[in-house]
Length: 115
Image (tube, rainbow, N blue to C red; front, top):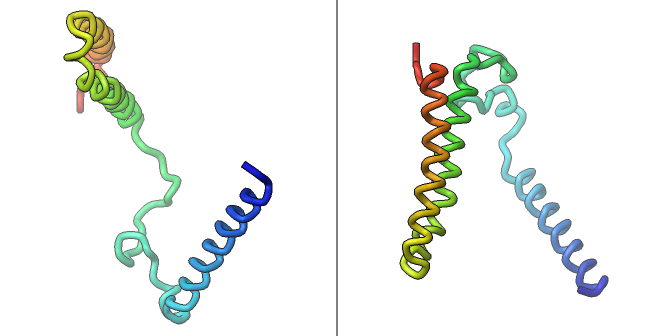
């Protein structure tokens, strides 16, 4: 890619951003709207934005990410499993067994208890 093309692309991005900010300045309401908080449709927040969460939610997040990564790997597998055959099925069972070992460990440690 030549430097001329790169310069044109950069200028287009800067012009687009300036245009977006310009439209925002033209369409915004007056100073009266600055008093209203965007949080919860204008309601005052009850706690600070950087307040602490209970440590239990971090564990729930990690379990969710484990299952989310499972789906990320299972979708492409589902598209090619018919072409590859029994080898792909065996590999997926090994993958699921590793994930199940993590779930069993989390269960034994009490990560899935809500109280």
